[in-house]
Length: 369
Ligand code: SF4
Image (spheres, rainbow, N blue to C red):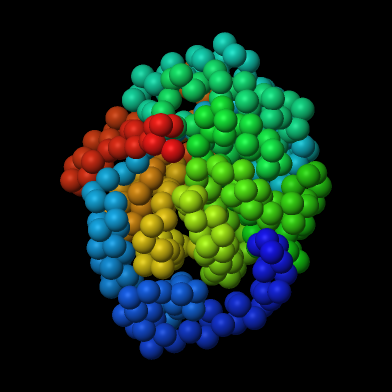
């Protein structure tokens, strides 16, 4: 059985109803339990948990301290290509958008590397649009080979690949793959992903299974918050996480919180979640799963990012540019989304230290595997 088989037997509307029916005593029980299950997670993300936010935040902080200490891991993306054959309605790289398309060559990649290294980063996230020929597996393999001598940890956020392809990249030094389902609502999925390979809901859904089988060290999950009811979508993410932890127990996991913002690309999100709800969600994940990495990007505001460290976030990007060549040539027209937190890595580092936390640039070496 793979996750697709589990997913097809679980009805979106039933789960949604069950979340919205949770009451105060379900929330209190979830907070009291020593071991928590998916019903507890539902209670913690439900509207009934909103008045318990302070209690949740304190518990989340305590659990994070116990497992991670006062540390925040730092990473930075390098956008290698904005070529994309998909038509995601919420994204600036959408194939139909008439923007300049760029795929960085060796010289340009190394120039980006020099800037990023000068900031102190050891963890780099390589990002591309989804284009099989312009940024396919050979291109990615070459980019990893080029960058491996310069970083201790290389992650990817690119098109879903086959198991054998992931194995090849893992051999080259790939550590982590982030692959977001965007939404687990199969019925509505194609409203947002009408054309291109990404329109195949099941192929994307099966990707973490392929990553688990390929033995990739860490898998990052998430949904695009705002596309569909965020509570139901994050319940499915938690279900996916538990399934993966059980079936690929040697693998590490990470959850990200990409939140759609009304001003991005003209797309208006159907299901906004407020900053207060995002805090509730972060705390709910930590209380539900003490081991999972929780990661926040520069999509969020400086004030929010400053505060969310103490709620359970353990990984953070800083100084990110979301266009290919962004660190060496500032071309805003090529951006995937506007970064809300535009502070420099050094400013972020100061902010983290001022809160009494340690900045972790490197927590991984291949020989540890
Ligand atoms: S979200 Fe990804 S796959 Fe979709 S258009 Fe943007 S870059 Fe392409």
